[in-house]
Length: 164
Image (tube, rainbow, N blue to C red):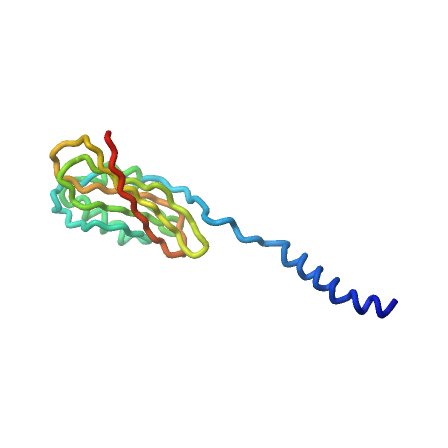
């Protein structure tokens, strides 16, 4: 009997270790959709006077946020239409996408989704051009607020042409 126990002991220990490793804290299933709220969306009408280059950025502090607002408001008070201007950067970060200066008002910019992956956060931006519009020079933008993450934020973009 002792000989049988000696032979079975390694197998029992292996099963015990395998069973324990499967218990407890399991990894989440990525990607995870991240909730966000739109802070501001629209167009700049200063014909480039705001001096904002096309960009996708993450703002994580109030100094960068105030600098962006001042720059966006340098020609017209765009920030008056923002749903929120007082952001708690201890809890939140701001995702900003600013398009190129466009010769017509038939361009829009949207966030398709923001997702968390194991090693990054990804924001998917959609640039949309429709056939309707007026001959007004614009620079579309969108600003969203989401929970603060310590992971790198990367951006993807997609251009869509619609017949609206």
